[in-house]
Length: 142
Image (cartoon, rainbow, N blue to C red; front, side):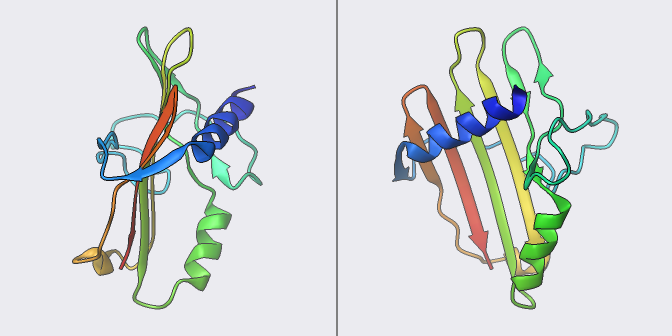
């Protein structure tokens, strides 16, 4: 059920309108590639290993549900294999859904390739708005 909810939110967000330079709701403190902040325990993934997106168990509080999805290691490796040498691809994003019980917040960060190539790379904030579901994405290619 959780997988279907996350997939449904992503699909609805992709069907919404897309604009540039709106409010930025990305949590830039989220480490890349499914890494966890030192001292915090990562919950078990609720998605199967063959899924291209891995989703650890959500963090449920009284006010909201937080989810930190990341690319599967196998998909990360495929992207790294086709990325030109010395280049990087970084995507940070957030999706927020206003559900009847409590809001759901998904924050993700993917970094593939040479981290040093990020310096001076151009990036544009993309905002997606589909009514109760909105999201911000910041892709960087350097």
